[in-house]
Length: 381
Image (cartoon, rainbow, N blue to C red; front, top):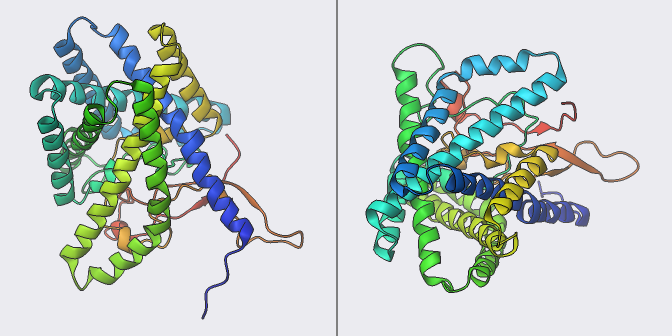
């Protein structure tokens, strides 16, 4: 049976989704990260680089670890019948977890700068260590972030779920906390290795004398990579399906190369937005600049029901790429209503979007093989 032709309006919606993520969601995510990161630069032991780094590591890892361990109890927030109470508590949870993610990254990043130096050898070495180790654990998908990741806030089923490498059950015993520790302290920190390596190389060689020009070039690189990455993801997915039972090692290599390119796109996009804020957003008043950045990022993403997009916790698995029915990077802020066309013609609406890469947290033996479903937008709080 021949596939149905793709309509012009459908193509416009796909283009709109890409532009929304590249031009609105992702810059807001970077606003939150830059503001939170540099607020800590200003107020958390600014005169002692080593101390502020270790404090940041301790705070970040503690927050993510505790939220992961107690996620079973935290999920009870979903039982609240008051929509306003649920809205406030769920957004507070995301905000605090986001602070933990930023703190963890800041500490690991600074410690690498302190103990290995900001050199091309250090940057290349940490990037290679991060990529190869994550590839061995089949968790390389974790290096991909906004604008290729869109997590909506109105997904009550998963808003309080923090995935783990081995998807152990949230039950008493030693297996669950060990799985959490492996994910939080080891795998999540290896993602920072890759990002710090690529970012530092760009700092060293991409117009290092001009923050604004370097940031602009980073943006150009990210937009240039976005088109081939988004267009080729379906082909990569089908080729991965073909290679899965024929040439498994080649399948892993294919997925790894594709994810490294996608991760580099994310790094370039974030770096561009970050440096342009440094250059244009109240450059003479850093305290005002970082607070404005933090507030705009936080409030903007809450208004757009997309604040979960700034989270980097959990474990993103590569092992389901060949099993997925939808796109690898599901960034649909607007969804084409293919099954609900009426006599008035085609239409679309805002959609609850889930990334297809995280490991499933359903407590069943077959959970890892399940395809993550798509949810229609619930406009209620």
